[in-house]
Length: 487
Image (cartoon, rainbow, N blue to C red; front, side, top):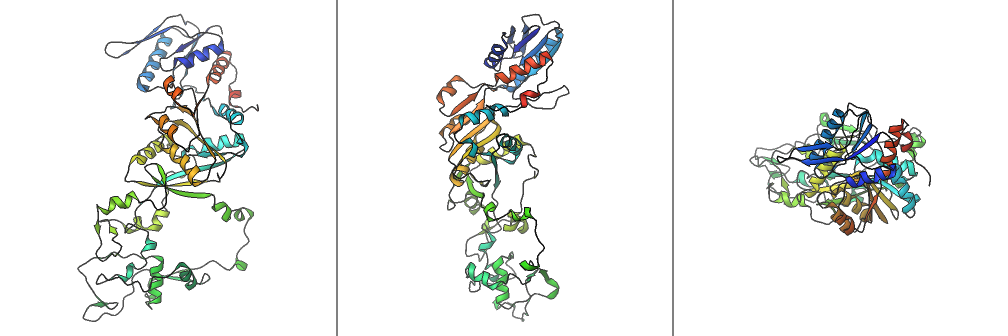
């Protein structure tokens, strides 16, 4: 290529050599050094007057130095009367005042999946967090595959350290701290038999007030006004009040109508009929403790932490605890179910910030997470896709979820950029649920780490970058680089 100069930054010279080899040229001479005080020095070793200059500077473990070096190189080329200056900086993102062409590795990754994944036509592409849903659905559409989504949420403690469904007799503990379970020890079948599904339900807004004599009796028990008690209403507690013959004032009742009988309901659309029990069975939940899937009977770190940090309510036979000044509405079981993340749009929110917060929370031994898998992956190959691999906690958690909970047969972890910080490559290598790790060579990885890994596969991205340089220099459109081609 005539009248073109390609300069290499110090971050990834091997990638620049591969690009130049494909273009049939060599990298232009440039001396990059440091002054004694740590400042960056750039000396161009060739004339670039009236020539198209391309500077390739990838990310590195010294990202601040690499960025400043890139800016100084751009300034040096501008002062040397270059005709045009184009920067290739993977993986770098931001907001720019100059024209930007975003190159995508999706066609390269899709081609590798078709050529190397056995039974790829039955595979499922999974996003390990809601922030990556857009890129996952794009790859799934390109390959005509099904896709799934994994979400994680911190488990919150309820008002008494356990579910309100386990507190059916709490209202029977009133004055003297005694526990009367005669009205609440019934099975689910007995409880369901009491409720008529076609009848209206009357919910009491407040505790019924029965006549109390001068000796201070409430429900037959001595009152103890000096000991405060919090009132909680569980599903069985309302039944207990009705069986005991207690009624609330008419003005305190709220009538909730039941659904009409099937023959009186309005005809439903075909789309609504699609949501059957079979679709609901594709939603799987599990427990995460320190970033790993645990059994349902595993002790909760949340309860273990709270048991030594809060006071126990007098008269609570379960030994459950109440947090001082805790809002019962915010800690109730139903409030926990209705809690949703701050970002509700598909692909919304800051994916990088979300991933960092998630990784940090995984390291906290006092937190437990609930992880949810939406999608059927049983006996199928799973492709977990994201833009980069830096920390590995969410990758390992997603892999364990699809294998141990979803029954997946094989797991591929695929990302465009392999940063592999915090020894994440070694940790993913040791994970039994991960079979293959696939990244491109946009980010430098030491030869020692590559040689020590049995699962790592590196895809060469130099063809895409070289073709972008050639098309840019010749004034050709680069839209062809975004197309998927059949092999």
